[in-house]
Length: 397
Image (cartoon, rainbow, N blue to C red; front, side):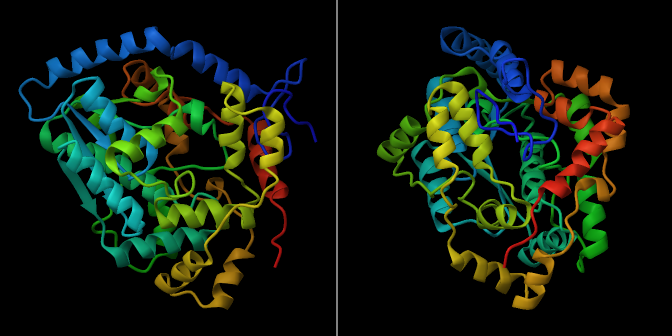
């Protein structure tokens, strides 16, 4: 096993990885390229303020300037504050409720929006319908079982923007704090969801907001709704932000990345580590090492610590999804699969690569989408991805 000399990625756990003559991995080089493309400090703020002026001008006849997704988490909560108080915008908060929010998340969303006097647009999916979709992904035996929540959130952003004639969406993602997830760990698109649900589901999807390709292209290309990630341009100290949110808004920390929602909590802290040997802390800690907020030695030690997990969440998963213990264990031990085993938009995305390159340049899709989803897989790429099934260890009882 080779471990990157700069971060903690290794060639047994991370697909598509390569190393230069100094032992630095390709993901670190990808990070460096993003650093050059998205400057922070004075230059980054200058770019953001110029963006804000354009956004204000385009929204002058509307009630709102920008849609911002809110989950109750740290990044999205801070984005609302930053957009309104620092950039002087009129944001509309948008939330996708998959009916699995934690109590803390609900309280955080309420506190932030009320104290900042920001309106909230919420799309609530039918709980039985969503449970059926989530259970379908579980039965499909793929790592990305929380994909429906991500797609639902993205679609809710567009629904809010379309309803109120808003041309801009702010996303709270930062490659400097969250890292760069390897291809093969996660995949998402509307056809992927439909394929899996048609095979394993029992109910129709009536209230779930799927992001069909045609409507997505219409919203992006025809309506020109742009997606922007402001955190790419600022020096973002997450620990300082947490304290600020707690002091100013009574915001509460929920224990870990994406743990404000219980399907995400279960996926990241139980399902992925136990079934697929995927530990998202590799992404997070490597990001901290690259930015200098954590030493490589500290990261290598911290990654050895077991992930915390509340067994009450496991009981809730089984109860709400109507799993017996034996049925649950059977699926946890079922053969591991990837998105390659199901029908997706991926071949179509590859054919549309040039269009998506233009959309990335026009800020209609994130660069990460262009890099991960439109690259045509070579035979070696496919072999590399399929090796993931070999890397994933056998389940331990």
